[in-house]
Image 1 (cartoon, rainbow, N blue to C red):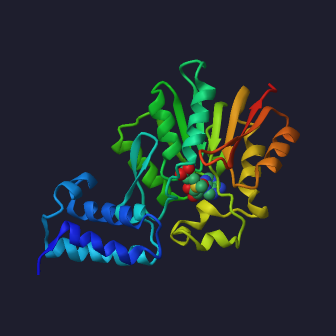
Image 2 (image 1 turned 90 degrees about the vertical axis):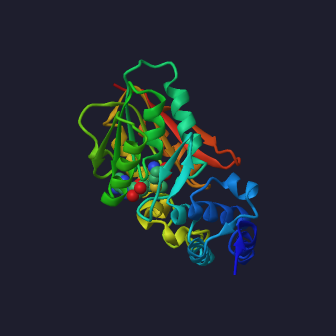
Length: 282
Ligand SMILES: C[S@@+](CC[C@H](N)C(=O)[O-])C[C@H]1O[C@@H](n2cnc3c(N)ncnc32)[C@H](O)[C@@H]1O
């Protein structure tokens, strides 16, 4: 039996119940298996798929049916203006985190060339790599508690030829080297334990350490805020991502801790997503 690329893609129908983007998912999986760009599938729709490739494709479709995210199945995910390797040790970088990167770059726009930046909970290295690529004179320090995640981040920096990041295994600010920073950024875990969303949209496949925080989801953010005040230079920035319902509480906490220019920002979908504060004391 011979199967064309177009006929193989019809298998996508079985993903309708698990994915709104079922056709795109199937295209990404098939192009991954045949090692060709997605555009190739349309241009060569009548080409035959080898039996070996079709078997591999069906196995990936079966895993996707069980909810496994496409990024883990193909082993990479686009973020900002580059592509990152991902596996089950790291959170799949999200488009909303690009808002955090954008805000960091806006804050640093008119600053001195050689800056010290910290990315706490670096995961795949997404934020650290985006900032390090923006200016190779900046020295970025990326901290991560999970050793396997740190290995992924280091490997991503290496593949992208990024040399201005130092990686540290450790917990939040305790993982940072002594000198103070011009900007600290973090996308910490912020989902409340037991939240029903943790059972949806492939989240069961992503690391709990990357998603869940005690104290109704605030534990990591509070640790970071309290730690950051000892690691920020005067007038330096702290920027943190947060959950859809956390912004008001975090703004209050930042003001109480003595931060100035405290503000909240929305993501591209209009959801409250990032808080900022400026450390105005010496
Ligand atoms: C929401 S993920 C963000 C990953 C990445 N920065 C991103 O935006 O895609 C949170 C990350 O924090 C890490 N993490 C959890 N607890 C930590 C701790 N105490 N210290 C440092 N990193 C921690 C997790 O392993 C995970 O990689």
